[in-house]
Image (cartoon, helix red, strand yellow):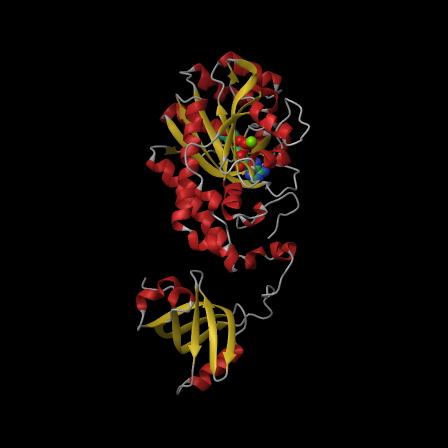
Amino acid sequence: MNRIYIEQLSKHIGKEVTLRGWLYIKRSSGKIKFVVMRDGTGLVQGVIAKSEKSDELFAKFEELTQESSFIMKGKVRKEDRAPGGCELDVSDIQIMQIAKDYPITPKDHGVEFLMDRRHLWLRSSRQHAILRVRHHIIKAIREFFDDGGFLLLDAPIFTPAACEGTTSLFETPYFDLGTAYLTQSGQLYGEAGAMAFGKVYVFGPTFRAEKSKTRRHLTEFWMVEPEVAFSDLDDNMDLAEEFLEYIVQSVLKHRMPELQTLERNTTFLSNVKRPLPRITYDEAVEILRKQGVTFEWGNDIGGTDETIVSEQFDRPVMIHRYPAETKAFYMKRDPKNPKLSLALDVLAPEGYGEIMGGSQREDDLDVLLQRIKENNLPQEAFEWYLDLRRYGSVPHSGFGLGVERTVSWICGLDHVRETIPFARMIYRLTP
Ligand code: 4AD
Ligand code: MG
């Protein structure tokens, strides 16, 4: 198909082109009229000046309203002052549909008003920038693992049991088999994949019935989870930092215009280079106490505390070896101190907090059985998972990176709701 989009116009200077899109804004200046069209790839200003067709074109110009769809023909002219470097001398306009009273106007709207009209809000240039960065992050994630020899393993969304605690499970009736749960993480399946293929990554939507109304929580979010056989916690941290550096540097290389639209200060992003600082949970607790936080050893490092710790660093920081009590059943205990799990969290700087969580996994059958009992999990549902320890068990580890939190941090947003096309939160199921 030989269709021309606005982002390609600089390659068509001096040529007659046909553009298809929507009216972004229009204005007149004396006898000249300007129509700014958006087509999803960019904006271009069409100029209607006096000509033998101008009466007809002026009438069309009068009719056009914000977000009306139309086809515009004209000759591309180089115009250095215009965004994209081109303008169009309009020779014809064909109106497809006139939009009446488009609700999102250039004035300031409240965020809930905009979230209610998310299906329309997606048309704005800020949302374009965010979702383009999101797309690029996902592309970089795939590139990193694909080029690194990881097999993509798609985990199921309907699952028979909890992976990340029983308090945040979404349930759904499942025919004669009782209850299915929407997956909280594909990790357990990733582990089966790692034993089959050596190294894999699971990438898909995950679900948490979290009653949190924070700027970091969605009920449906995307997670990428690599899992590697014959890999311990140190190997896992090496992989995590290489991965994070790759994503951030790739966004800086390819998506600078979008970051500029978002007025993102990229100093901290340029710092995302190996090695990243690695501190233990104990050291993190020390940092908190030095900052005047009364923190009891053994507690999880929650939202505000994460912010305080991450603010002490100019790049992401890895915290490892957490108190086992706060962490998931599948994590291996530290052989040097069984009170600790070989867990890993990566906190983004600038107060963004946790973007990655992972661990070395428990690979001993009896210990894992014990953990399943301690956590009151139904052993039956985990028999297949226990098989991975019965047949050729090896040390293995992996982590999960939350896409939306990563987008939020890289774009410098104050809430994850704008990082996904249609956010799902405790109080939002529409549009
Ligand atoms: O730390 P989490 O719970 O780890 C796991 O699910 C492991 N099974 C991953 C693994 O080892 N394969 O979640 C991983 C990441 C978090 O660091 C965060 O970025 C994101 O998933 N995340 C959320 N993002 C948005 N909304 C929520 N409610 C999230 N919960 C977790
Ligand atoms: Mg976590």
